[in-house]
Image (cartoon, rainbow over all chains, first blue to last red; front, top):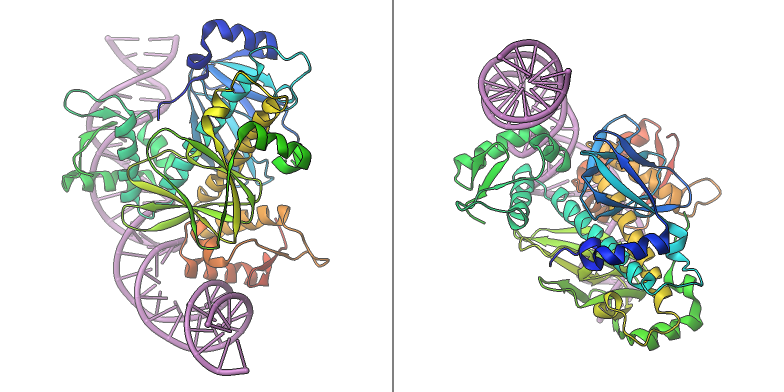
Length: 217
Length: 217
DNA sequence: GAATAACTGTTGCAAATGCCACAATATCCT
DNA sequence: AGGATATTGTGGCATTTGCAACAGTTATTC
């Protein structure tokens, strides 16, 4: 299924209608900056990443921090998508410089009387984006549910090979560092490297560093 | 945050509008029946669980089956929320007898010209339900990311204690069997039982079978 | 109400994997 | 350009955890 980006789907000119209808707050962030943390309480805003690249992490009470989701251009994120739990803190940080739109949540769930033509369309786009987020999260769960490092890595690479652009030899570069990948798959990095090495020795995959090729599946 | 059920939020009389506007297909299922499996391709429908209780599982290529999500009354599910991957098959089965509404996906993403009054409201409810699904999934990921069985169990019980009704002594009953819980947390059941026993010995939790009480946190 | 199936609970043992410490390489920054 | 930093890659060792096998209890079914 083709990913439907809100900017693709509504186009530049309709973007003006979002701005008029929702009057979103817009802010730029530098790489490394914290965009927001999720606190308990009623959600106030929905955020859209207009440009750049960010990451959603959880911080547990022992101070460990885990990579939940990478947020790319056009993705939605924010409080309405995460359960506020006292044991966990959700943190969104900018990986690169980012531009973020902050939409008023009330405006989404309680459309005002003066409905502009595009309001309904915008909401339906938000629904699609929320559904896409579920896709990404359920993929992540599927990977975490694989019960060996081998299966996690193979499943991830199988997925990555289906979405990453390949060169003429069939090699692709995964969109995160191996450090982040081990975090994302929730496995020890050195153990993952060991498994990757074995997969290469067995001829199931090939490549070096972040570049891979899946030889069988 | 209070869970907003589509039936709560729009009420019985407005339900008629969904039926008029969306003309959903409605079907009953018996306990154990397969409601649907996700196949590759464009999503055609969004499903709403009108009554009963179901489960979303993934089946990997080795034939292992894992519990991703329990679907309760008022939850949305279906193809738009899951990435179709060749390595995984998504299966939704009825735990109890269920009634399911099948909404036309096109009708959501491409509102027809004859917009009824409630269409926009229904879409916004669907958005909220999709956001809730993300909450449930990100909670699941948070639990799976805990790197010991102990933390997984404690985190789950901490969450469960915040949503389950408690008796006067502070005990609550988790909404799934311990077999399902070990599956949900992706740990070996016997290892989980061992850990639960130790947590009881250490005085961190109390209870027996599915009934628990969190003594510290 | 008996028979059958599910679930809960326990233990020994082997192995996968996490943890640690380090080397080599690539990338970033001024 | 060169130093600092992040990333990739390797190996030894301890231990958590998975696996298998079983007993006791509760729930379901006919």
